[in-house]
Image 1 (spheres, rainbow, N blue to C red):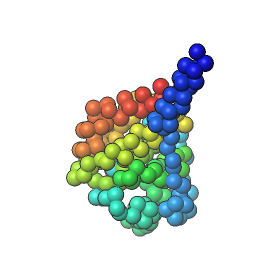
Image 2: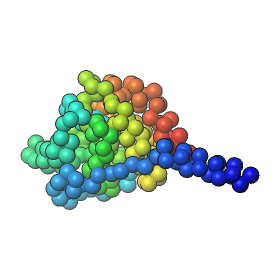
Image 3: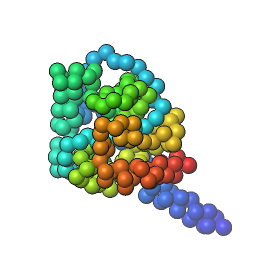
Image 4: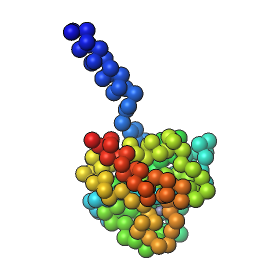
Length: 192
Ligand SMILES: [Zn+2]
């Protein structure tokens, strides 16, 4: 009897190890972020998925690219207060902290991003596929954000669900994983 209990405990332990739901978030310092300018506050109540829009490969330098996005966004072209997204995920599944989640994000299109927690996948999914690592990180990060900020997984959507002016987050991400409810279901499974 004792042996059976031990075996049960051990299999639970193994299961716990193999099915880790933890997500590691690389801080802003990992990509050498500049300080943000003064910003508008928000409470995040929904999750909106983007692609970054530039073709990006696993071997490309993610931290350098993220820094460039911030520098461009805060420059004279856009004059934003910080990098536009709250989190970014590279094709290897690494997650990076973007702007403060209690700061309203930015958009170059017509929707109002107030209350949206913006997650951006690096790449262009009109012409690329989402890597398995990136998809896995997206599901885990989304579940983490739902739990941490008390956001319903029912709110998970994407840029093009709010804007007529964009294909973002690209057809291969949108139709394979967002529009059909795949990510929503996976996030709900993780939260249960
Ligand atoms: Zn977008």
